[in-house]
Amino acid sequence: MSFSRILTTSAVALGLMAAGAAAQDIQLKLHHFLSPKAPAHTQMLEPWAQRIEEATDGRVKIEIFPAMTLGGKPPQLPRQARDGVVDLVWIVNAYAAGAFPRTEVFELPGVHKGDNAAVNKAMLAMYDDYLADDFQGVVPMFQHVHQGQAIHMANEEIRNPADLVGKKIRIPSRTGSWVLESLGASPVQTSVGEIPVALSKKVIDGALIPFEIIPALKIHEVTGYQIEGPQGQRLGTTSFSVLMNEAKWDSLPDDIQAIFREVSDADWHAEVGQVWAGADAFGIKIATESGNSHVQLNDAEWSAFEEAMSPVVGRWIEDMESKGIDGQALYDRAVELVDQNMATQ
Image 1 (cartoon, helix red, strand yellow):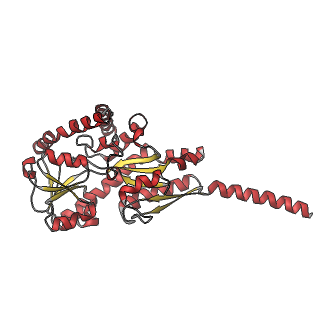
Image 2: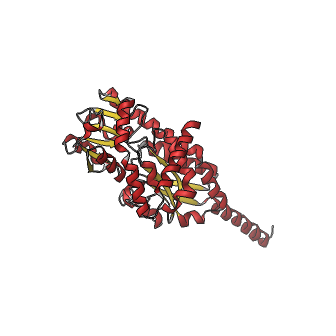
Image 3: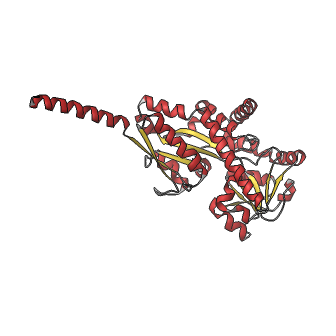
C-alpha cells in the first residue's frame, strides 16, 4: 500500500472515530441535595439516568452529584441550572420561594388525595398549557410529589383540629403554613435536618412531613404519633422537579431530546409515584415497629380537618390573581385530572 493510500485510509478512520466519539460524548451533571443513600437517589434518579444512558446507547452519560457536593445550598439549585453551573438539578420547588407559583397548586390540600402517581401524571399533562411559564431558563425533565404531609407529634395524639390549637408545628412550605394557621396551630419554619433536635428540645410539638423521612432522621425516636386521613389523605404535599438548563437542552440533537421525553413519559411519572409510596410505607413500618402509634382518622374526623382547611384554597387563588395568574383555572384542572387519574389507575 502506498504512503498516500495509508494517509488517506488513516484520515478516514480517524474521521469515523471522531464522529463516533462526538456521537456519544454528551456528559451531563445532575446536582441534588439529598444523601446518595436516599430512596430518591437510589430508586429514582439513578434508574432514570441509567435508562437515558441505555436508551441512547451510551451517547448520553449523566453523572449524579448528591448532597450539594458541587457547592451551594438547596434553594440555589434552580439558579445553578438556569445559569448553567450544572446541567441538571433535582429540586424541592418550595425551597425557591415564589419561583414556581403555578406548580404550587399541587401542594394544596384537596388536590393530592394520597395517590402520588395520579398527581404526577396530572403535572405532566398540565405542563404545556398551565405550568410552562414557571420554568424560564430551564426545561423540566419530570416532576413529582411525595406521599404528602402527615402530622407527626412528639407526645399528643391528634384527632380533630382543636387538638392542634396553639401547638408549634414545623412547616414544609408557605401553603403548609396556611394549612396550620387554618387549624389553629403555630407554624414554625425549620429545615428538615433540624426537625429531630427541635422535637427533642421541645422547640416544636410536631411536624408536617411524609412518612418516608422517618428512617433517615430517626423521627420515630422523637415522636409517638403519626397521623393521617382514613384513606391516607394528608395535609397537602411537596412538589419536586428535575430541571435541565435550557441552553443545554436546546443543544441536544432532536433524537436525544426525543429519548429524554420517551423515558420520562406518563408511565415513568406513575413509577416515580410508586417509588415514593413504597418509601413512605417503609417509613411508617419503622415507626410502628418501634412502638409508635399510627393514627388513621375516621371519616368524620377527617371531614372536620377538610372543612377547617377549606379557606386555604381560596387564599391561594386570591394570591395567584394578585400575580395575574388564573388560580381558579389551575385548581379546577388539577383536581379534575387527579380525580380522572385515580379513577383509571
